[in-house]
Amino acid sequence: MSISKKSLVRRAAAVSMSLVAAASLAGCSGSSSSSSSPSSGSASASAYSTVEDCTGAGQVWLVVSDDEGRVMANQCVGTPENGTAALESAGLAIGRDSSGQFICQIGDYPSECPTTYDKYWNYYHAEPSGTWIYSQEGADTFKPEAGWIEGWCYGSTCTPEGIEGDAAPQVSSAEPATGDASESPSAAESTAA
Image (cartoon, rainbow, N blue to C red):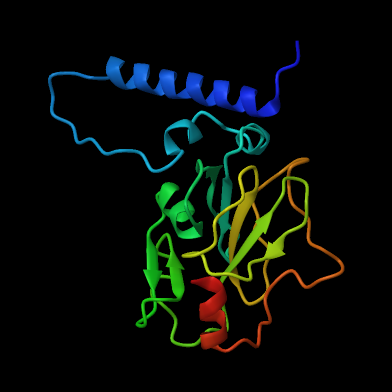
């Protein structure tokens, strides 16, 4: 008997949802607690602790690194509706420039939105073990591909860091790893927002 990959993914998701529900009920007590509905796919996202398990289940993995080498997120974020929702699923605060379009802070980094953009948040996508692709669409409108990795890094020239092992995306030798560092803020807005 042959079971399709989709069938296995659905079964794994159903089991994960059942375990999350059971854990939630087991944790109930007489004290008050706030409840919030999980974002799309986030309830099962916590069940996947490796890139391979997360992406193999049709979920999205997120990695965010700053220019000081700090990895701010490296986790499964479920099936977010867009790149911005992926950041929010990881619990990262987002700051925008005065126009409200350009993402200039992730996780309160840098401490203030810059006034010049010699460094900025670069946005990427990659298949596990694939090659980082610089996003040609803003995070507010880009729909992450199921089973892929979303990556962000801060700098003028950077590649997202934090993923180790066979699943780590590589930098293409045929194309630049980042956007044009000479982009004006208005050009960067269309890519990074």
